[in-house]
Amino acid sequence: MYQGFLVECTIPKDDGTLASFVGFRVQHDNARGPMKGGIRYHPELHVAKIPYGGAKGGIGCDPSELNISELERLTRVFTQKIHDVIGIHTDVPAPDMGTGPQRMAWILDEYSKFHGHSPAIVTGKPIDLWGEMLQQEEDCYLKHYSMNMERA
Image (tube, rainbow, N blue to C red; front, side, top):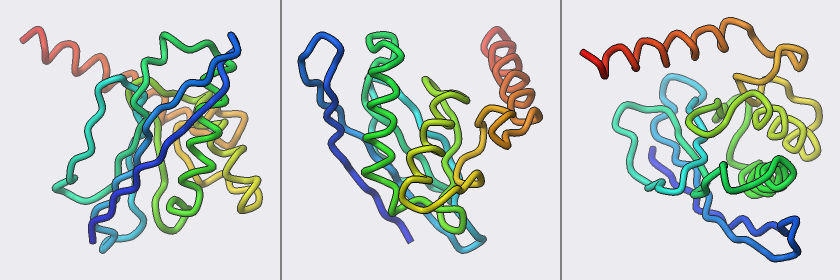
């Protein structure tokens, strides 16, 4: 099974202009249970097949060029567009490059508007929203490990 979903996410910016971004979610192979994979915010994202199962998604944007309220609007619009293709038994998003606990909290909140309170819809959310400290420690360890591997 391989499916890809492209969505257009248009938000009002704080300066009164509209900004449009392309978001996507790619799902590959749910034979072993729910798919899981990160959501990235990066200006150079490309949709590609995921060869080993799982899922991946993102929005083609530079998060450093958006303020916090614009990032929240963008995250919520993206969630509105993909809420029917993710789920606790089908596809569980996680943080990745350009995202983190706060964006996962916004996804949880927006998803819950459509499907009821669903804290298991994302991993990597803040601890006070049923997150897991281990996830944050693992992410820090992996970043440290990756940086050391680049130096080798």
